[in-house]
Length: 264
Image (cartoon, rainbow, N blue to C red; front, side, top):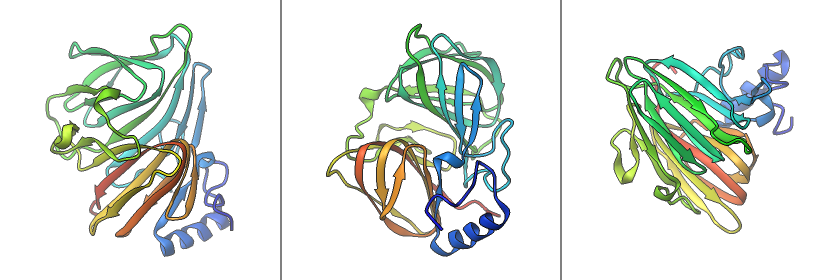
């Protein structure tokens, strides 16, 4: 079985899926191939869903610990998501190219450019819109939802600009429960890192006892403990171990370090 036989066509294949699950339970490093994600094409929006979302449902891929949504979105010039509501989710957008404009019912408004982060704690409920303010260029971003560790608190909004994130060949903490090291304070049990990797650069990370890690490759190619990843791939690491991230080719990725949830 090749490295990309874990899922076929975005849905679980019965026999192949059973073999994949057995393989995954043995090695505890599980590939989520880019081409297996749920796909959406609305003309103005192209999106790939790592986990079940909207019309895409796969019981094998509902969430990973506190990580509920990773949508790889591309929005056409002048288009976007009109005002809509959320509650009790921690939501952030990581901008890959272009600009993303945010407006919400709390009175916040901002435009975040490539490399920046928009973060919203939905809490008791908030309405917001996300638009591409450019008339000529598309915007690409990862939209991520995290399960909160507290519910029904007042909503809030914050941003990190690209200038605030030193991720060249290193892991930069962008969100954390305690807001340390200049990261955005998030009401979720997750440390979220961003990094870029190219050439001879190497990054290491230790998965601790009682923790699990998800890695999402946003662009380029790289290798994790000898596993080759390409744009859009996700990787679940379910056991304590040392990770060696190498062979980056214009690579940019997010790393989520989370405790194991009960009943997971």
